[in-house]
Length: 406
Image 1 (cartoon, helix red, strand yellow):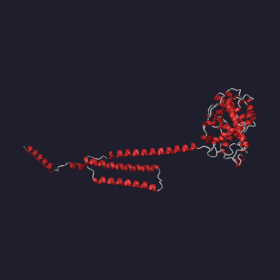
Image 2: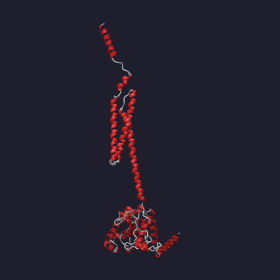
Image 3: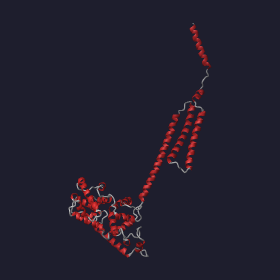
Image 4: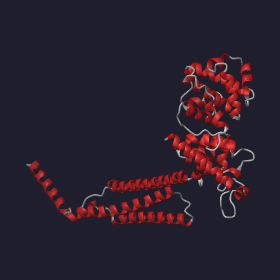
């Protein structure tokens, strides 16, 4: 009985305590989960301050002469736009969640603005890349566009003058030094040897040295087995004949061991041979293998190209001239330009006392003296009769050659 009364008393006390508690409404539940308005206002104020500070930095950079680079400006713009996007999205989602009585997840709010910022940054980088690429393409196009003034007319006049008379290169050049009765492999070796001897040597001297060598059956094995002093005497008076004799023996041994007494069929391996330079290698590929791989630039081509301003700026070495000439001259002309200019340099545009008064280009050549330009034109701007006769002879010989080839 006492136990029963004790239980009833406990139940009564519990019901009284519950009645004393205030009744919770939907509104109170909503306010329990709601963030304080003061905190939201304070966060928005801080974000606005960040935006204002970033904007001031951008304006300061502009007033200071835009000293900040493009990457810094891009980053500041990205931060500004990203912060603004976060502010707008947070405010909107906070208000939506508060109306529904739910909680606001700040981490979730940050995801979309970061995506927006990343896409804007990527777009900015792509724009900068495209701009730099366009500038580079424009620069390359400008470089390709350069070419000498009146070069086609000058080249045609050189063809006409070269067709009048033969130059030493036409009859005693390296391509004429090979034994026509020998096999092709031996002829290729003869042309390589002639080119090695021709450096800073007149064609007449090289030609006669080759005649002496061919009397001894000119093949790599003969050069290797020959005594060095005997070879030197056979090469004399070729320029630097002692060095060239050593190079010939070294090269001949390499050809025997590596190429079965033949010569390499590419520029890289030809240049690797002792005593063989780029000029020799390109001419050898043209005359021995009938492949045009580049322009052979010797002292004549080097001199004439600088006199005619066929290079953007003056060059000091033949190899520099070759690179500059190949940059603008059409490739279909590479095969003939060496032969044309060498013969022209031997007959008209000589190293000392060039015959400008007999040159068809004297009136357009930038290096021709004024005296030559006055000689070739009279007061009525008519061509000198002697020069006109030379032109007529050249035209007649050219037309005769064309008819013969038809």
